[in-house]
Length: 160
Ligand SMILES: [Zn+2]
Image (cartoon, rainbow, N blue to C red; front, side, top):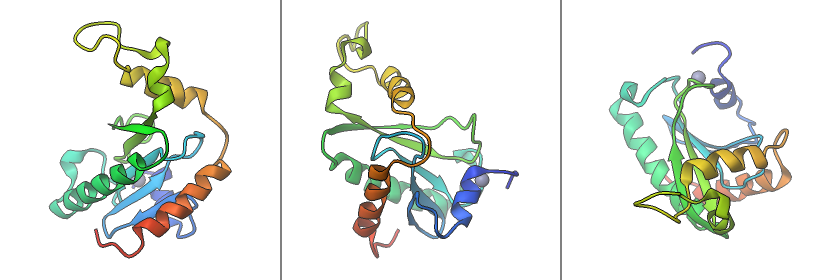
C-alpha cells in the first residue's frame, strides 16, 4: 500500500459509512462528495493499481459484485444506465466508478452526442463530468448514507 491511500484507509475502517459490502477480496462502496445516490465504487481489497495485476479470485469476486451492483443501481428510481469507468489518476488503487445515469440527465440538450453514429444520444463522458461537478458536495449527504444502509440489507448474507 502507498501512504496514504484513501481506499486502503476506507477498507481498513470497519465502521466506514461508505462501505456497502465486502467479499473476501473485493469491496463495493459509495462515492463520497457527490450528491448522487447510487454512484458506487468497486475495488479489490488489496492495493492493486491495474486490472492486469488481479489474481483469479479477485477477478471472479469483482465480476460477481459488479453484476450484482449494476442490478441494484438499475433498480433505483430514474436510473436508466450504469456507466462504468476506471482512471486511476487521482487515486491509484484500482476502482471502477459505477455511475447512475438518470432519465433527466439523458434529456439535457447540452449533453447530447453531436455526431454520427450516435447523434442525439446522451453523451456519456460529458454527462459523467458535468454531473460530478454539478452535484459535488462536501462529505456524505444524508440520502447517500440512507441508501448505503438499504443496500447493505439487500446484499445481506449473499456469497461473492
Ligand atoms: Zn490502496
